[in-house]
Length: 261
Image 1: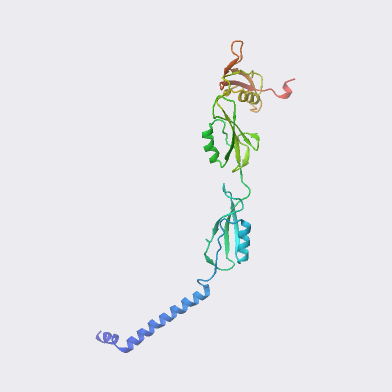
Image 2: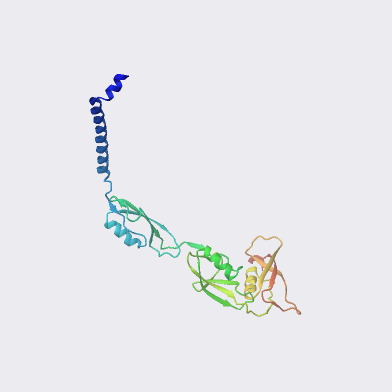
C-alpha cells in the first residue's frame, strides 16, 4: 500500500495523468467542432415576419428567400379574409434553406350556419344569441305591436328569413321589433277550416299570439292539418280582443286531395 501512495507522487504518474486528461480534452473538442460543422450550428436564414400579410405576399416572400410552405385555413370573425394570422417557426428564428414554414390563413369563404329562432325573445336577449352564433346585428326596424322590443321577424339582404335558414357566419341580420304602440284591440280572425300554416300566418300578422295547439284524432301527416276549433272565437258579442291575445287552436288531420271530391 505504501508503494502505491509513493507511486502517485512520482513524476511518471503525473505525466500519465496529464496525458490522459489532454487526450480526453482533444477528443471532446474534435467531436464538438465536427458536429458544429456538420449541423452548421448558429447559421441559417431568419424567418420573416408573416403575420398580418396577405397569403399571396407571404408566399412570394417565402419563395424569394428559399423556403417551402404549407397552408392551413380557418374562419375567424372580424379578421381580413386571406390574411396570415399564425406562423411556425416564429419570426426571426434561424432555420436552414428549404425549411417548410407553416402558415394559418383566414379563409375567404365563411361557413354557413342556421339562423336561430329569435322570435320568442326580446331585443336584449336576441343580441346575446346572435353573438353566440357568430352573427351581427344590422338595422332595427320597428312596426306596430303592443309588445315593445319583442322580435317580430328577421331580414337578411332585404328579404325575410325564418329560423333554420342557412346564412354565412359573420353576416349582418336586420331585426323587426315591436314598438309598443300597437292598437289596443284587434279583430278576432275566423280560423276554422283553414290549414294550420295559414292560421299561424293570420295570427302572427294580426297582432295576436299563437297559444296552445291541441291535436284531435289520429295524425298521419303533420304537414296537412286543419283547424277545427279556436279559442277565443268571434261571436256577435265578442269581435275584438287585446293586442297580443293568445289564440288556442284545435287541429285534426286534413283530407287528402282525392278525398275532397
